[in-house]
Length: 137
Image 1 (cartoon, rainbow, N blue to C red):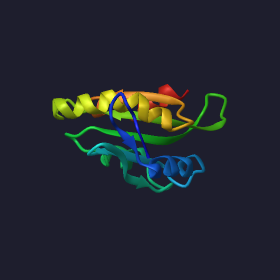
Image 2: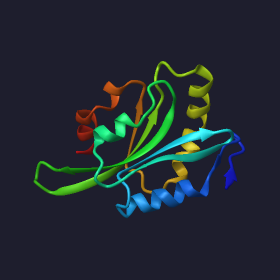
Image 3: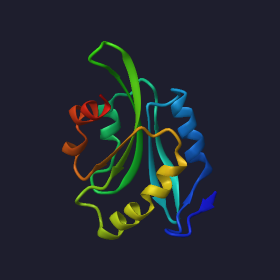
């Protein structure tokens, strides 16, 4: 576990290990939270879970980081997938929490090698299925 001098935030090794497993299709999504001075895994979504299952797992009034392995079909009828990094920062969360998550986001994202699309959302409409699909294509 390494701490970041700028934000003082450490990333639990398990975060990187589970992300590698997601890239191998072991999980559909991972939700991370900041616990004290480190980023930890909060929830793992199994491969059968849907995007709705994922969004339902995000708390309504607390910030989280998340990765989602999105499967889709291109306009040319090719099966593809893209790994999304989502910074969830609902308007109703505490200002201090939003600041901590915002200041640690880039450092944490760099630990996860293979992110293809980044999305920032403050309410569910900003990360609707249609938005995810349009960003993937």
